[in-house]
Length: 50
Image (cartoon, rainbow, N blue to C red; front, side, top):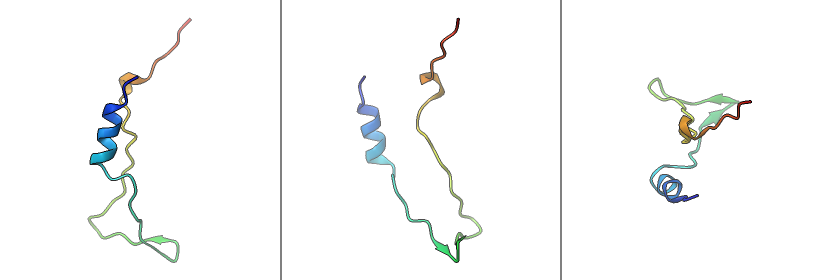
């Protein structure tokens, strides 16, 4: 399987970012948020049926 697209995504997107914490609480501003993205499309999931 060709992994070129995965290499391009990793080069163009940040893979790690620091998350500010203070006393176990997230120190985010009112317009900040944390979003997790897997990067795999749903069409890549295969189902085996009987």
